[in-house]
Length: 206
Image 1 (cartoon, helix red, strand yellow):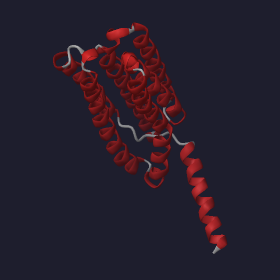
Image 2 (cartoon, rainbow, N blue to C red):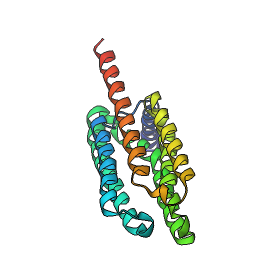
Image 3 (cartoon, rainbow, N blue to C red):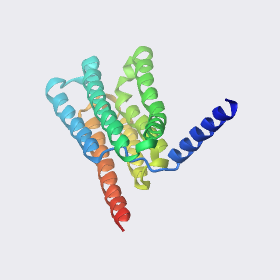
Image 4 (cartoon, rainbow, N blue to C red):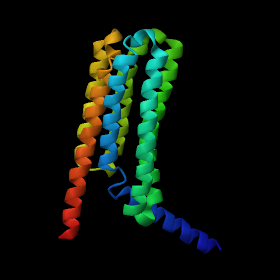
């Protein structure tokens, strides 16, 4: 029995190691393009429904958290089904690895929001920039098992986050301070994954 448990443990370790050295193809370009559209639509919605976000921070948070939840739910569902199809027997390890890399950034963004609003609510205008900076850290952490050009998306989110913080005050809560960075950023990622998948299919056929 001990030998059997050791063998199973060795197999599990090998599977995890293979997963860590395999490019993850669970993110679908079309789905990420859809999340880009969600960001733009949320920006348009904010323009009409929350013209003064600094005076209605709870509504502002509700809109963007709802947008993030829908985007994450859609991407998560598609990641699960796509990984099952593409990675087959390694899908569980690959999904676990993807979540493991990005979850700390999401958790940090949520905690930053809670602490900032409770301790120093007057600095709530910094949230869009901080969200983008923490998101960039998630992208950078994921770069090692995604196509190399993905690092450009991490640089983009870091840059736009710093710009948003640099704007200062209520200008940082502009709908386009979220819609443009996430709309363009997610479309960039979708494009990178699309052309990467196209090259991968061509190589597989040759």
